Each structure stands twice: as structure tokens, then as C-alpha cells.
Image (cartoon, rainbow, N blue to C red):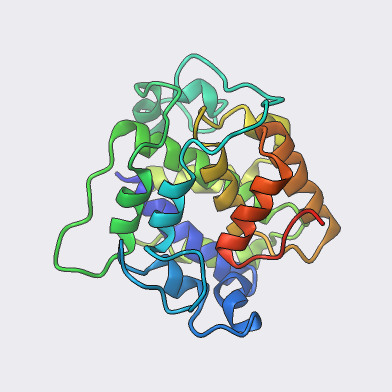
Length: 249
């Protein structure tokens, strides 16, 4: 059972479900390669999109964002362990039992390297994530799914495309994603589930699920950034690293 691996599958699945726009942002910007090429670039390697801030792949970006929370959070992280942070999204037993044993306040240390190993196509086995990293992956999954629904459009066809990428997932992992897609949360409730120190990392995953071509998506990201205590300049820096239009003028 690996929520880290599930996160990589859902990331690609959401991009496909939302019209693959996340995979072609670099092409629209006149760069070679796609955002998917950037995600899968080996750690320490060179991405296909020249000029992109995502050298080292998605994992390199996430590790660079660790602890990048410079403002005051409006919404403080929930206490009482990860199961409380997730607000009971996963039921008792199965995946819920796994989450119930994890400690809250995961800082995301080394998370990017562990995530990138799930993308890397090398003979070496994927890096085994720690319990806290699995917990952070669960929160990122929730943030991506909530962001994908921000424009009010995640219909049955799009949901099916996301689930199509989970063929190798366990029943518990599939159930977690299905429950996440069935739930609509406020940005305040979502921010309360983000561990201290992982604000920018989780925010960046939410950005990947959004096109920023709908006012509701802009409102979602601004509200989420505010609740997380991310300053406008830092938010725009994150967008620049990801090859996405800035959120603030």
C-alpha cells in the first residue's frame, strides 16, 4: 500500500481528466518538452523544457519548497495525528487504520526525493516512503482533488479518467481517492489538514490540478494561499518555477 505511488498516478490522471492542459503548459509557453517531462526528469538532471524552474523533476521542486511558509497562517494545522488532520476522510480499518497510526506535523523532509523515485524509470527500486511522507502524500492527494473541482467541473467522465490510472492501486487506495473526489471542502478546512512546514509543497500540488482559466480557480488558489500564510510574492515565485501564470499582478 503506497499513497506516494497513488499520488503520482492521480497527478497524471487529473492532468488527463482536465484536458491534459497541465501536460502542455510548456508548449503554450513556447518551450520544448511538456510539464510531464519536467515531472519525470531524474533528480539532479535536466528537464526537457529549457528555462523551466523544475530541473530535478517534480521532486526537486517540492524539496526546494520545504518549509517555505513565510507569513502567518490563518488556519493552524489540526492536532491529534494524521487521521484527525484528514477529517475522517478514510474510514475505519484498511487505509484508515494505516493513517490512524501516523503522527501529525509531518514536515515533508526528503519528500520530493521519495516522490521523484516513483517517476524515475531507472533499474533502481523506488525509494520506500516513511510514514510521515505517506501522510503528506495523502494531504497532497486531497489538495489536488479539491483543486480539480474548484471550477465546478469534475464530471463522471473525468472521474473515470482519473480512476483509470489507478488500475494497479490497492482497493484501499482506490477507495481513498474515490472518497476524496466525493467530498467538497472549504479552503479553511483543507488548509487545516496541511502539516506545518509543508504549506508551499501542498499548494504547488494544488496548482498542478488547475488551469487558472476560470475565476473560481483563481479564488480557490488565493483563498488557499491566504489560509496557508503564503505571501503573494512567494506564490508568484512558485508559479514561475512551475511555468504557470502568476496569481497576483
